[in-house]
Length: 199
Image (cartoon, rainbow, N blue to C red; front, side, top):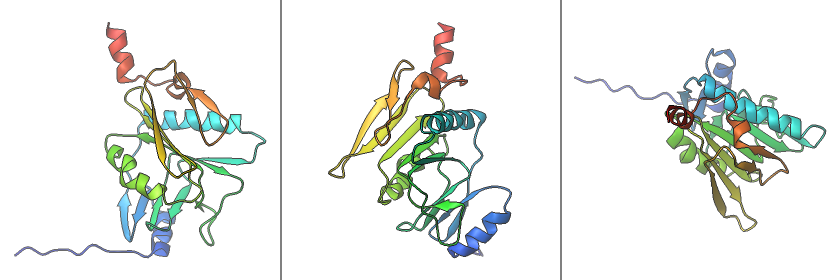
């Protein structure tokens, strides 16, 4: 006889209480708590390169840039998640009675890993697009030089632009900042570089 264990569903406040004492981060997906996989050093370095560039370029301007540990709440999908990099225009709008959970990013950057690639480009992007302030989504492949930039038009359509060469420059659409792909991948030994070095 097979005993089926019913999944436990949590209220948002239960998740937040558990997350406050947890040693590892988890997402909250409509009542379910899903452990997040650990990031690689390359993942961390790419996110850090982008965060540092944005933070420096936007100093003394009305923007906030956050990395990794700041949580995002998406009410339409009942989702708590931790984007790699978030940019907020003006002041953060917080989840009620929290100062560690925001709701109003203008731009999000995700560094893709093998385990999260499909989720980041699929269901998670669907959820992000329900955020009224959200205007730009940048996906960075950590294994090869490849960046996808989605920008929202005035009509509400999303346009995609690909970058595949280190000589190219990513010009953010929602804020007046640009960064070379060489800077994004600084310190990273991608598969492309390994192939070039072997030639």
